Image (cartoon, rainbow, N blue to C red; front, side, top):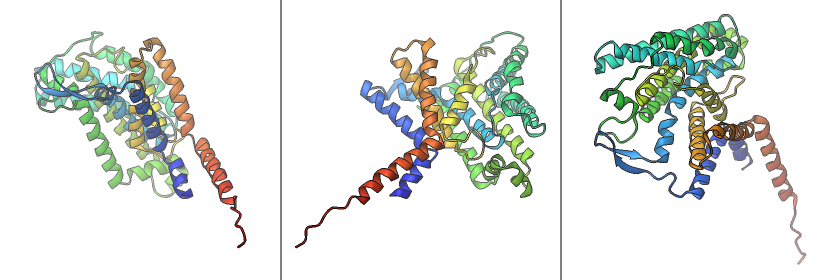
Length: 356
């Protein structure tokens, strides 16, 4: 029993899942129908799933995808990339720029996505070189694109905020005809499965953690820390481009100023809530994705309670601080210590036996 409690207390997924459970219970008590799912007919005349739960899962997709890449960067680089939202705006601008240059067909859509991925990866490699080769702290290195990224996105589309409308884009940002689940949710699941398989069947996951724990030891064991870090930034670049393209398809336009605005903070918080050590080393992709859904569920709950939009960030920050503190190793060790103390006391209490 003691070993089970220790495992649970030190598990990376306990706090995020417990937090998610609390939000679910709170909403069910407040409104029994909060998580109810119904089938409605969309504008194209197809039956689709609708409800608060679907909105939460759909709304968190972009942040969840970006949190996958951020998890790997945090693990091996001992820091965070604060430029992800700005680079997503650049990728979204490239995506729209390619689509506007010709008639939108499936091959053109794929080409536009690949172009946006290429540009996003190049910018991510730029960040990666500053971090891995020049050994600049990640938050400082990525501050360059955090500041200049949206200006670059502005330049790509000539300062305009062009709109794009096409059934193919509506399918990517909304629903594929005949499939009732929002496409962004499907894309997020595919991404999570693909990256999980890569980490499971290659040494990338192990190398990422080893580099994050001790770079010197990793080097002595034949692992090239520079390559590992650059690979993490490349994966993050693909994740960021995907999130940017999904968001553009969902809203039907590119606005360099507002596309995924402040999303980098939600991504970093999702990683922190998910149990990945912000100082590097151990990571948990599933925890980071769960963290993204916790943030979105919390946001949805606050709006459902009619909290003013100006105050939502303050409430959200307060709750997230509590979750992150509870997730810290010190608090987990304290819980294990209290548990041991209580149960040892009970074991030491001896029931007197009367002599026959």
